[in-house]
Image 1 (cartoon, rainbow, N blue to C red):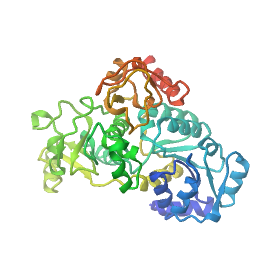
Image 2: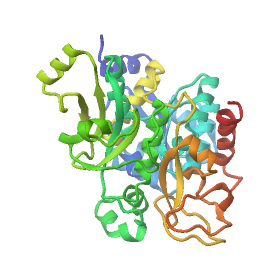
Image 3: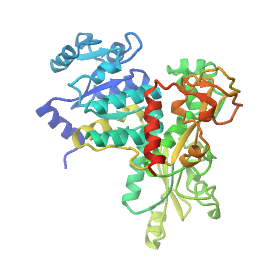
Image 4: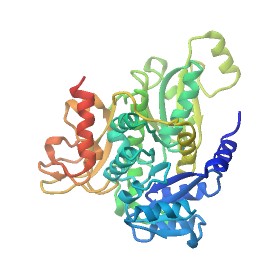
Amino acid sequence: MRTLKERLRTYEKHHGPVRVGLVGAGQMGTGLISQMEKMVGLKVVAVADVVPNRAAEAYAESDVSAAEIAWFEEDTAAADGAIAAGRRVATHSSDFLCTLSNLDVIVESTGIPNVGAEVCYRAIMGGKHVVNMNVEADATIGFYLANLAKEQGVVYSLAAGDEPGTIKEIFDFADALGFEIVMVGKGKNNPLNRASNPDTTAAKAQHQEMSAKMLASFEDGTKTMVEMTSIGNALGFPPEVRGAHGPNTTVKELATTFSPREEGGILGETPVVDYAIGDVAPGVFVVITTDQPKIIKDLNYLRLNGNGKYWVLYRPYHLANLETPITIANVALDQRPTLLTEIPPVCETVATAKRDLKVGETIDALGGYTVYGMIDRAAAAHAGRMLPLGLAVGARVIRDVPLGQPLTYDDVELDDDQLIVQLRRQQDEMVFERA
């Protein structure tokens, strides 16, 4: 069995490298380019970012020479010709990038829900495989996108390295071995602060060379909620309670903490998705059990972290964008996704008021000043007409909403021009109206 590197080398020898188009050249996107420049058989050949010069700067930071870069905005034939000649395309337009023929896989890395919807939709309809790093969009319309990709004969996948993809790899290992999966989860990297916003995170974000809004979305819990929504939907594992339990615990105590209440844990039902605060971050984990006496004896003999009845499969890291090339390669070579939602969703991330919201206000960006995300059961969210977080950006408040209360469809006027709003309506029809 040849290694992935060997297979990529062979592919490049016969076909040239897998040609990747990237939308979003921020911290995550630039790191992805940099990692792929160290690999064989994969190459980012087109980058789109709305910020002036950011696409070219991302190439430069990734050690791509300026002589290789060509700017295009509307001449598709010329851009395809440049790629064929071995050059790299830079553009401000994701729409333009999605029209290019000389791309094998398009990666969405903006983190903006509606942009993610537009890029994934156009790429799939254009016959391109999609690797989506935009978990916010996936948590909102991932089921629709997975079905659309299947209809179009292409692959849609979330990425290895982000927590949902890394959890799925551990899950697949445990599931194949026949263990009973009690729950899946992740460690939260930052202390939970629902009020976090770009002002409160500005200094820390500058020090860490990252977006203040992105850091705020980590601190206010939004990022954790959408990540748990995506993995929960892929596996059919709901949260037990709105917002999940999110206990303070340690790696050593994970198996006990996330066991049934009658066994000394916090769970009233299984299987579920949840998260932990403490030394678990930045790791991910899967809690397992078995009723087979010899297997129990062997797990204890092997000193797997557990309490004698429940055990945890724990990976202490996830490399985010730096692992994404693994998914890109698997998709391009074998049409094999890392993670996607093929069953009706069981989770929803609902928009929740970060402060008192007044009539006439407009909901700003995720990680902003107006809302944060809270995971809930999809059926409960639907029954309560709760607003999916991915639809909130740009919505106008038409009824006052107090701090901490989930927004509903009746509280806002949505921006109907947003593609994500239109696609979510189609997803709801697929899930609820045809049920």
